[in-house]
Image (cartoon, rainbow, N blue to C red; front, side, top):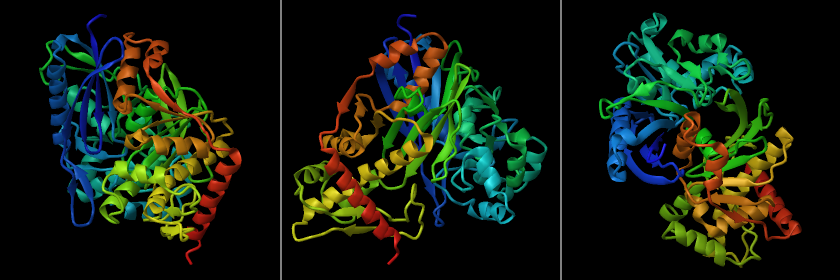
Length: 495
């Protein structure tokens, strides 16, 4: 299919991207549309579902015009989306009954506390692989049903659709003909049994969410319906892949085999390990989810999320005024005295995996007379690599898999200093791709493979990566990491 293109949509927390890939797997054009962040005095975070849908249509038109291609040259599309964000809309007509409740919003905390109080928390974790938390979609949907007048009654009658951003877009793009989601997104709702691969009726009951209101769960590379994009296209095209954004990045990084791991460095960080066809249930605070179902085969992941990685650099700049730019932070880190032993623990809101101590507070430790501005900045930069190492070491322990390299993406991966230090501390190679749009790329690649436009063995060989290999002696890297662990223990002591 020469002169044909695959469309990728990456619907993220901040906005929507349209991506066009050609027959040689190259990104030929990208366009973005931001959407409003609706935050009230309680800190609740919402998005307007209609704005997200309008922007999705708009970026497709934008990117098609920017690329200068004919509309009939688009063969198929794939969608990656922000996970856990929850929506409820009318099954007939598609009108949202409330704004989308964003993954960052913890308004369902009281609902989770109520469910925990009657003893269902452990069963929910065993079924879904996720600890009971307002972070996931179920508590958000439950909040909407409990607080929007008439919503619970309509849900009981099957008149509402309760879903995630992907299922909302599929529904609207197919003019209400298809209400579907994929395995990766279903596994992040806290209602999907990741062993039986079905909605768990008991768990849904605990949240007061009728199963009949949930989407049909399909393979991540199946056909989710056809769309003409509100009449923009003369002939409809198939939506032939749907993946949660982190899962799309895992696929885009070609982490398709057990033992392959990727880390996305952003404001926080997501570390995801492919564990293969059998789930690994963590005892140390990692979560278990479905990577995807592709080619009829389900794969599982272990995932660890870190709250403060890239945001630490922002804190140095905005609040401490120790640096004027992100680039300067890495320059200071490179120039710091290598004999300095300062560590920084970024426990701004406690410590997450693998420590899970909500009472811990941040600190600088190991400061001496040789500690100056550069050394303090270096300690803050280095904490990013140390936290990633914490998660990967736990993954090694709990999965029993040999992790031979780390594939990375996100803004901070542009730092030569940070990526080299990450490789030194982990003692494995760190691979940085030349393309950063991994989530949308993963969805587009999956769609292209599904329709026979791409061959998997061909497309992933096209991705160029810069390889950072450890240069530090094992004794030194082990000593530095031991110092980090000692500093963490001080933060956990609450003294």
